[in-house]
Image 1: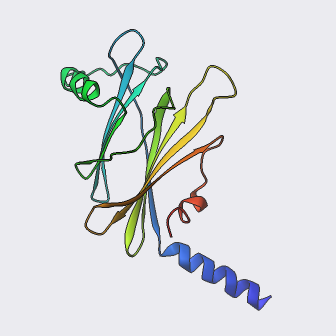
Image 2 (image 1 turned 60 degrees about the vertical axis):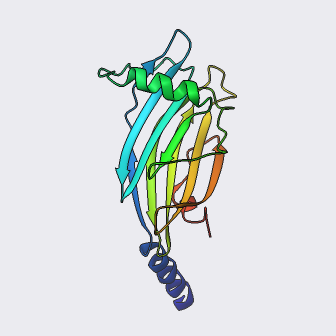
Length: 170
């Protein structure tokens, strides 16, 4: 019994060393034409600056009330065929999420570890059929200087549980 209590205490101590911050995203879309819309997200969490432009065919969510940047966004998207993701003002290249046509941003999470941070961008992949629904998690390992060290894309039917965040990058 003492061994189990010590083990549980040890596991809780390890998880306590890692701080997780989650921020729910309330997305709105900027309509480009009849079939394409854009989600524009800008967040700054724990000194990580995130800019995301996601091209989507989805028309379910509300339109943005303030569309001042519409021409700038159209220009960015026409230059970049894939969705545009910037972390700390650097474009993430070779991140192909074009297979997911109807992404709806859901939340951004950051885990602070001793030597690095993990940024997780979660989006819901909407489909009119029950087969295509699911979640897409874009995961980035960021060093102390703010540079991306590794990336992962995790596609799943259910939202990823917090305890799985800790084992993304070792």
